Length: 169
Ligand code: SF4
Ligand code: SF4
Ligand code: SF4
Image (cartoon, rainbow, N blue to C red; front, side, top):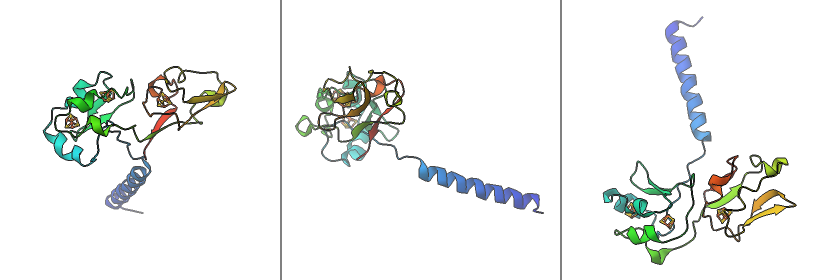
């Protein structure tokens, strides 16, 4: 029989090992940056002394400033119109209109979470997509045409089953 002290040490060891496994399996957070940067490292330098000018200028309110004081896009309520306002507001020039590009990360529909893939009629993601990038085959099984998709994110918050995901590159 193990003494109480040894049992406590054993449980503590097992618990730490399980936490390590869970940490390893946790998907890495995808940080989406506003689509106007050229040097990814500039966020960690210039943004440290900025009041978050890009975030306050974004009319869609999709830029949030993280604990590390750098900006990231949050598509949980809206999407990016590529309006340039954040780049114009960024006086330290981390974001510049001249560097405008599409958001690089890809947007995709999870077939296991999407109701339409389960045979339920749903077109919630189709209307907000101005690029007409979501293909429905015979009114079901939507997929995103990556040639048309601009990764604007407007479809994401409209999906009632949280089936639309942003995938890191
Ligand atoms: S381009 Fe416009 S909508 Fe997109 S993040 Fe910048 S300010 Fe917001
Ligand atoms: S405005 Fe520019 S410097 Fe300021 S937080 Fe945004 S990206 Fe960083
Ligand atoms: S992220 Fe792509 S599929 Fe979704 S609304 Fe924007 S363009 Fe359409």
